[in-house]
Amino acid sequence: MSRLTSHRLRSCRITTLDRGQATVEFALLLPLFVLLMVALLDVVAIARDQLHVDMLARDAARRASQASNIDEARESVTMIIAHAGRSDTQWQLTVNGDMLTVHVSMEPRSSLMTTSLHWLGGVRRIEGWASFVTEYDITDK
Image 1 (tube, one colour):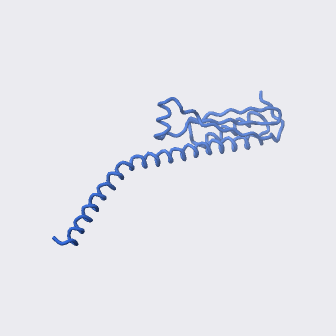
Image 2 (spheres, rainbow, N blue to C red):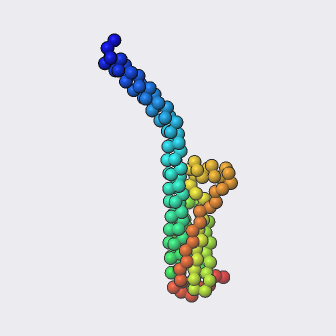
Image 3 (cartoon, rainbow, N blue to C red):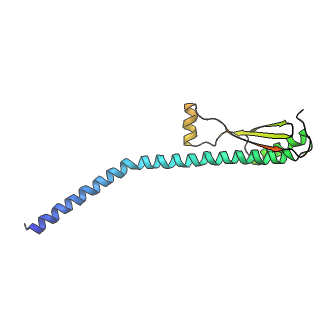
Protein backbone atom coordinates (compact mmCIF):
# COMPACT_ATOMS: atom_id res chain seq x y z
CA MET A 1 0.00 0.00 0.00
CA SER A 2 1.42 3.30 -0.96
CA ARG A 3 1.79 6.23 1.31
CA LEU A 4 -0.79 8.27 -0.58
CA THR A 5 -3.45 5.54 -0.28
CA SER A 6 -2.95 5.14 3.47
CA HIS A 7 -3.24 8.91 3.93
CA ARG A 8 -6.56 8.90 2.06
CA LEU A 9 -7.89 6.09 4.24
CA ARG A 10 -6.96 7.95 7.42
CA SER A 11 -8.60 11.17 6.23
CA CYS A 12 -11.73 9.23 5.24
CA ARG A 13 -12.00 7.73 8.73
CA ILE A 14 -11.61 11.10 10.37
CA THR A 15 -14.37 12.57 8.20
CA THR A 16 -16.72 9.70 9.05
CA LEU A 17 -15.99 10.07 12.77
CA ASP A 18 -16.45 13.84 12.60
CA ARG A 19 -19.80 13.42 10.91
CA GLY A 20 -20.98 11.13 13.69
CA GLN A 21 -19.75 13.59 16.30
CA ALA A 22 -21.62 16.44 14.63
CA THR A 23 -24.80 14.36 14.63
CA VAL A 24 -24.49 13.64 18.35
CA GLU A 25 -23.80 17.30 19.13
CA PHE A 26 -26.82 18.32 17.04
CA ALA A 27 -29.02 15.76 18.84
CA LEU A 28 -27.87 17.10 22.21
CA LEU A 29 -28.35 20.78 21.37
CA LEU A 30 -31.62 20.55 19.41
CA PRO A 31 -33.93 20.14 22.46
CA LEU A 32 -32.23 23.06 24.20
CA PHE A 33 -32.67 25.23 21.09
CA VAL A 34 -36.34 24.25 20.75
CA LEU A 35 -36.94 25.01 24.46
CA LEU A 36 -35.32 28.42 24.03
CA MET A 37 -37.51 29.21 21.02
CA VAL A 38 -40.70 28.16 22.84
CA ALA A 39 -39.73 30.30 25.85
CA LEU A 40 -39.09 33.27 23.55
CA LEU A 41 -42.49 32.86 21.88
CA ASP A 42 -44.19 32.65 25.29
CA VAL A 43 -42.49 35.84 26.48
CA VAL A 44 -43.63 37.59 23.29
CA ALA A 45 -47.22 36.34 23.86
CA ILE A 46 -47.24 37.63 27.44
CA ALA A 47 -45.87 41.00 26.28
CA ARG A 48 -48.60 41.13 23.61
CA ASP A 49 -51.25 40.47 26.27
CA GLN A 50 -49.80 43.22 28.47
CA LEU A 51 -49.96 45.69 25.59
CA HIS A 52 -53.55 44.60 24.90
CA VAL A 53 -54.59 45.24 28.52
CA ASP A 54 -52.87 48.63 28.57
CA MET A 55 -54.60 49.60 25.32
CA LEU A 56 -58.00 48.49 26.70
CA ALA A 57 -57.53 50.53 29.87
CA ARG A 58 -56.41 53.61 27.93
CA ASP A 59 -59.28 53.41 25.44
CA ALA A 60 -61.86 52.79 28.17
CA ALA A 61 -60.56 55.66 30.32
CA ARG A 62 -60.48 58.04 27.36
CA ARG A 63 -64.05 57.18 26.37
CA ALA A 64 -65.30 57.31 29.97
CA SER A 65 -63.67 60.71 30.56
CA GLN A 66 -65.93 62.15 27.84
CA ALA A 67 -69.12 60.95 29.59
CA SER A 68 -71.48 63.44 31.19
CA ASN A 69 -72.38 61.20 34.17
CA ILE A 70 -71.08 58.13 35.98
CA ASP A 71 -73.63 55.73 34.44
CA GLU A 72 -72.67 56.81 30.94
CA ALA A 73 -69.00 56.39 31.88
CA ARG A 74 -69.62 52.83 33.13
CA GLU A 75 -71.57 52.00 29.99
CA SER A 76 -68.68 53.30 27.85
CA VAL A 77 -66.18 51.15 29.71
CA THR A 78 -68.45 48.11 29.42
CA MET A 79 -68.75 48.59 25.65
CA ILE A 80 -64.98 48.95 25.17
CA ILE A 81 -64.25 45.85 27.29
CA ALA A 82 -66.97 43.81 25.55
CA HIS A 83 -65.58 44.81 22.16
CA ALA A 84 -62.25 43.20 23.13
CA GLY A 85 -63.94 39.79 23.05
CA ARG A 86 -62.37 38.33 26.18
CA SER A 87 -64.81 36.94 28.73
CA ASP A 88 -62.21 36.79 31.53
CA THR A 89 -61.68 40.57 31.59
CA GLN A 90 -62.37 42.36 34.86
CA TRP A 91 -62.46 46.13 35.20
CA GLN A 92 -62.98 48.83 37.79
CA LEU A 93 -63.85 52.48 37.29
CA THR A 94 -63.02 55.04 39.98
CA VAL A 95 -63.55 58.79 39.99
CA ASN A 96 -61.58 60.99 42.36
CA GLY A 97 -62.42 64.65 41.90
CA ASP A 98 -61.91 65.38 38.24
CA MET A 99 -59.60 62.36 37.70
CA LEU A 100 -61.09 59.16 36.28
CA THR A 101 -59.12 55.88 36.50
CA VAL A 102 -59.89 52.58 34.78
CA HIS A 103 -58.19 49.41 36.02
CA VAL A 104 -58.37 46.35 33.69
CA SER A 105 -57.11 42.81 34.34
CA MET A 106 -57.30 39.50 32.49
CA GLU A 107 -55.75 36.04 32.50
CA PRO A 108 -52.77 35.55 30.19
CA ARG A 109 -53.51 33.35 27.20
CA SER A 110 -52.64 29.73 27.68
CA SER A 111 -49.22 28.61 26.51
CA LEU A 112 -46.57 26.16 27.63
CA MET A 113 -44.89 28.65 29.96
CA THR A 114 -48.06 30.04 31.51
CA THR A 115 -49.39 26.52 32.06
CA SER A 116 -46.14 25.57 33.80
CA LEU A 117 -46.21 28.72 35.91
CA HIS A 118 -49.86 28.09 36.79
CA TRP A 119 -48.90 24.63 37.99
CA LEU A 120 -46.15 26.16 40.13
CA GLY A 121 -48.56 28.82 41.42
CA GLY A 122 -46.77 31.76 39.81
CA VAL A 123 -49.23 33.11 37.24
CA ARG A 124 -51.08 36.28 38.08
CA ARG A 125 -53.56 38.27 36.08
CA ILE A 126 -52.18 40.78 33.62
CA GLU A 127 -53.15 44.27 34.77
CA GLY A 128 -53.26 47.70 33.23
CA TRP A 129 -54.70 51.05 34.22
CA ALA A 130 -55.10 54.50 32.79
CA SER A 131 -56.22 57.86 34.16
CA PHE A 132 -57.77 60.81 32.38
CA VAL A 133 -59.17 64.13 33.51
CA THR A 134 -62.94 64.19 33.03
CA GLU A 135 -64.47 66.69 30.65
CA TYR A 136 -67.61 67.07 32.76
CA ASP A 137 -68.15 67.11 36.50
CA ILE A 138 -69.09 63.50 37.27
CA THR A 139 -69.01 61.93 40.68
CA ASP A 140 -68.79 58.30 41.75
CA LYS A 141 -72.06 57.54 43.55
